[in-house]
Length: 84
Image (tube, rainbow, N blue to C red; front, side):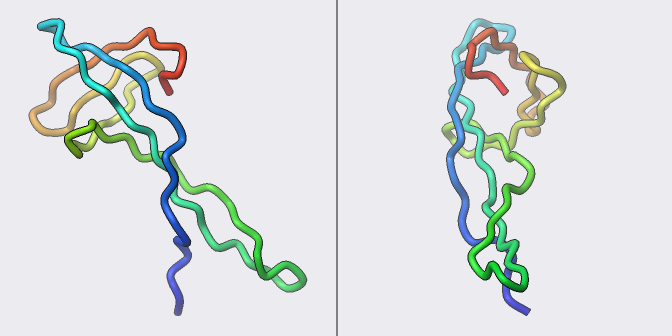
């Protein structure tokens, strides 16, 4: 069975800060999935977003404006209008 993921796209990037005031750039990616069906072999749909720092660290979204770098569990906040 072929992979359903066709490609990964960068949706947006935003700035967030940790408790020490350090700035982090967070990138929001989505996987573009093959949603082909009879009659439309080129159909696509977006998968769930994946957040990562510029250094490639996984980020969890707690709520809009509040995030956690998975390792080491550091909390980030953002009021950037592009924040997810």
